[in-house]
Length: 300
Figure 1: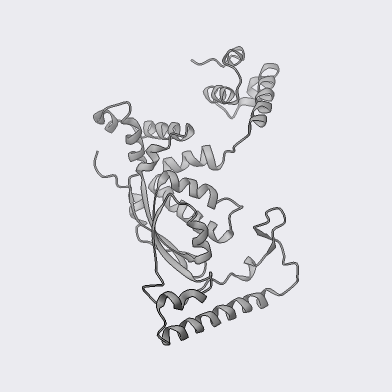
Figure 2 (figure 1 turned 90 degrees about the vertical axis):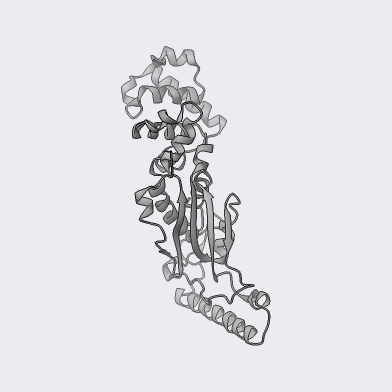
């Protein structure tokens, strides 16, 4: 089967995409793509020669099936390596995703570049009302945005002056850094498989995630779409643009859907779903097989 090369991804290798004021992300390397995912799935059922002869539509179909049924192991065959530069407070949120491997810039070995994140005036918002940990709307106190930014810049400047003073005094690097603000930029090489990257994307592209980390997640997802477009389309369809419902919601929806198709014209309510999709949805919601057959949606 050989090495999988994706031309669209090759064009992006080592291209730095700027994020925030001093940050960036770039795709350093990747292994595999949609073809590798399909091959990993097919190894369970067909031989290698047969797998190599499968069409692009068949590849898309198996990827979509694997994603929709949460058979995630084939997606782990694709590996992604990024180089990322972000503020420390973003990195601390990011590192909560413990399924990746990373190596970070060390303030023990080198003098840190004196770069700190300063938000734009439009980014300065008040405390979140519904999302307590978030931000939204205007600042309640009425303090001018320029004054807030001025305070941030001044505080960062004082911290860096102290950092340089500690270094000139001969203090060890690991101690010089301890007053550096969390706005300070750090950098790392981050390696993750596609399955876990999509879980990361689902959380960090969500509107509830902090705005700054969303900028990184959105750009990285755009890059990964070039590496494995079929897998990303399937994930977007079944997960990101889908939703999770609890048992009570599922039972209520099943009852409503059964009543609609039993008492009303099918075409008005099922125009967006193919016959097979509609049957699978009803079974997934808990409508019994005999009821599905009663509605004329038996498997063919």
